[in-house]
Image 1 (cartoon, rainbow, N blue to C red):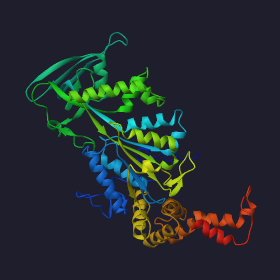
Image 2 (cartoon, one colour; image 1 turned 90 degrees about the vertical axis):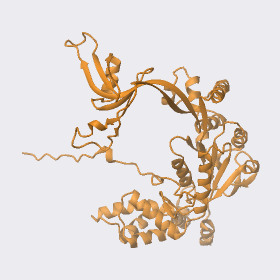
Image 3 (spheres, rainbow, N blue to C red; image 1 turned 90 degrees about the horizontal axis):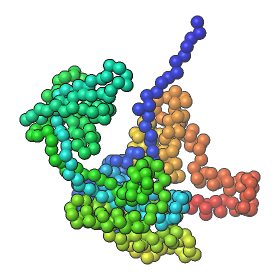
Image 4 (cartoon, rainbow, N blue to C red; image 1 turned 135 degrees about the vertical axis):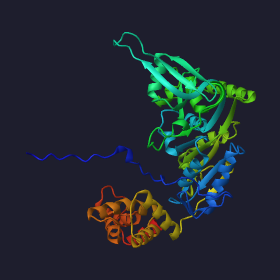
Length: 467
């Protein structure tokens, strides 16, 4: 009988994406906004992190809006990591929109429209609304199914109670469907929105905590509600101005948000929305939450974009603008003029500039240790020291890229811990920028379309290139 080999099945829920900044969980500051040496995935850059922490604090207190911050530093000094740390520190309530400079030139709309949409994504509106809800503990759910298929719709009864009263409600087909979808059972504490019929499961009642010997990790126990079953409750909805724009400018309403193709939005629509939001603010129904718009590689923007940003920051409802660049003195796109960071002087004058410094060897060692932990790679101390040395002499990004490669080399020789020989092997296999450039300089005559003529003193030219 032929032996049947069963293919190994992998649990898809355990597969996690590991990104370049997936280890960042915040800015790593204490209560007095002092930077810890290594905390929340952040290492080094104490001055830059403290400055970013001050900006985050002002955003949270609503004391700063329409301001701009520039993160400037050499490649691989943690500019994007600081921006990600700011996003995590602000939390879910504060809008945080990210944009790469090159995205503006690849969208099917004008550059200024793309920037305006990005600005509106970073401005939140917290809308207060009073709604009637039915809140109580489920005593019994009774669903009567028809004996013959298609004879009549399902009917049922729902018994709810609080500490003071108990009531039986008749259920229609839609409510039964909603209850089944939420998997509501006896002992659950639920809230039903009377206007929309939406059912929200708040948790399990403490009285039913001993019904089962074991519970799932997500089970939450709550007290049985007291007072009346029907209550008036103030509900907060958090939306961005861009979402309101899209809903009001498209015939398909909020479904346009899922389609992704929002297109250009007319200025008349935005003016009407701004007027309505201002009315809500005056009536106390809504409040504006200025968020953060982060534009990476800002030197890619041209003079038209910078002119638009100058004007947009003067608007009453403007978010905090955080931009980052790794360029020195370079040309402003769209002009023949050179400027620091490729940004016009009048726009630079508006910016609070946070400078990032190159990492020290000790910082590189700590960062590599965090990345090893994040990528679930065990490594000996000698291997970490060698990787730190490689990071010093080449770049931190190159050293980080070698971690997973070394782990695969270790796996190939059936080892469990990455050792010196694994690091040496992948270092020989994968070139860094300096070694690759040196190879090109030595063999450039053998490459196609080579523009560098073969001359003596190639070494001097190479040294000037990499220095």
